Every structure is written in C-alpha cells, then in structure tokens.
Length: 401
Image (tube, rainbow, N blue to C red):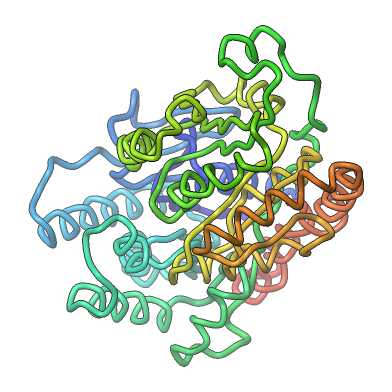
C-alpha cells in the first residue's frame, strides 16, 4: 500500500506534532506499507525541495510571503494543492492521509477528488481552538464560528477520520459524523527510545545552582495553556513545606518573558531557573535533575479535548509527576497509580498535591513501575498504528494492502 501523508510541518522541527508524525511513519513502514511525506508552506524555508531527515524523505512546499488574514490562508491552500497534485500524480498513491489543520485537508480533498484517490483526515486538535490559545481569536467569535464550520465541512467530505483521543472523537460525533467513520489512534511512545531515568549530572546540577535542592520541573514549550503561571503562583506555598525547593523550566516560547516577570514579581526569581532551549539529545540530562515533574495545564477546550505526549513520555522514563485534571490528562493518567492529578486552575490544589507527593517519596517506585507498565502494554506506537489497518482496508483495493 502506498500512502501519501500531508503534514503541517515535520522534523527537523521539534514539537509533539512532529514527534507523533515521525513515530507513525516508522511504524507504518514496519508494517510493510510505503509512505511518502509532504509538508505545507508552514514548514518554512527548506534547504531543498526534497529533504531526508532521520531516514525519512520529505517533499517540501515553498514558504509563502507574509499576507493579511484570509488572503494568506487562501494562498497557502492554493500552493499546497498544487504541490499535492504534483506529488500525487508522480507517485500514484493508493491513499492520501492528510493531517490537521483544515488548511491541509481542503487542498488534499480537491486533489483526491480530481485524481480519484481516497482521502483520510487525521485531527490532532481543532484549528479554531488553537487560535484561541494563540490569542488571534476568541471562542464564539465570527472567525471562530467560520473556522469551525470549515472544519465540519471537511469532516463530512473525507472518506475516513482519525483522531488522537476520545475527547476529540466525541466532539466530531457531535457534529453529526457517523461513529463508524471515526477511529482513534491514541498518542503513544516508542518504548525503545526512552530509557529509565538516570543518575543526575553533577556538573550540570552545580552549574544550574541545584546542589542540595529539591527540584520541580517542566520541559517543553512555554504556551499559555501549559499553566506554568499557576506553577509559579504555587511556589511560595510549596516553599513553606519544602524550603530547599527550586523550579527548573527547560525550553522557551511565547510566555517566557511573562513567566520571568511573574517570578520577579512574586519574589522567587532566585528559586526559578530558566535553562532555555536545549538540543534534543541533551534533554534527558535535564530531566535527570528533576525530582517531580509538573503539568499544570489550564482548563480550556484545547486541553479538555486533546491528550498531550508529555505524561506518556514521563511514564516511559519512569518519572514521577503531578498534572491538572483536565480531560486530556484524565484520559492518560490513573490518579494515585501512574501519576497524581489535582484540580485544574487551583493554586492551593497544586500546592497540596506537590506537598503530598514529596511526603510519599517512599511510594515513588510504585508510580514509576505502574507508569512504565502502562506505556509498555497499552500506549506504545505499535499498538496505536495497528488501528489504521481496518479503516485503510475499506478504502484501498485488497491487492495494495
């Protein structure tokens, strides 16, 4: 079977989106399927029209010049449609598998209908909800409603829909899509890529000023929905019970300046270490410095509906964490077994959960073992990718499977 995947962006860019994409491609190839890969103009400037990254070849679509809203989106879709049509005509895939956002789905649909190729659409999050978090629109606005209508239009016309979790599936079904046309491909981890947490690097710990400290940490992008502001608000209360506390934030993003200003305002600037972005192959060294990870996501449509990768990656590494009880976390975390959940948006609940976890250090080995078992037995990419087989088989001639 020959599958043309169409992505918003891909490796070498680092994000949950690109890591999921690469994992899917590797597992599909392990099943004996031929996969081809195309990215939208949002990949940005590329070194060449075709690039090989980590053994995967990506066809690139040229980046677009900045343009006003609507005009820019239309130009992007036209450019992507032309590129999909060019690659599909050359490769003759059995299936076009397009990944969110809807700006990718509409061009793929046009090409698929023109060439007689089935099109499946995989939704990782809804474009309208992502725009709310980025501050470019508000829930219920005219732009929000138009974007939602565009998404529903695409959902009703593709040949099958994949999504990453039960929350998103429920929202899709509520739009009138038949249940047998929607399949969940859960977020997962590649077990072989994650080693159990190691011994902290003494030199790195000293350089960051973490000697003799108890460390709460977060590794990732600093988006507003991640709730790192709530974590900083909780620090003064946590210090009462844990006076040697330090907070290690590894990464960067839109909220970095706000978080630094907040730490200064709270008088905890000396307790919060902003380590900056680090190379991907060094991330584990920073994880090893952290005693307790924190995932304090705020409650909003995006976090209630979408499951993140970070808690699964933490479990794969045998790490201990607290997480807010948003819907995306509740689908992944067994409270009191694989991790600890606290009431989203509550500083006092986060403070209490952290305090109780530190008091239960003697039970941390149980959390680590349970989390590792969970990802090994249920949330690994081999299991997840196997779920593509039946929907694909309904759309592709048997001789191509």
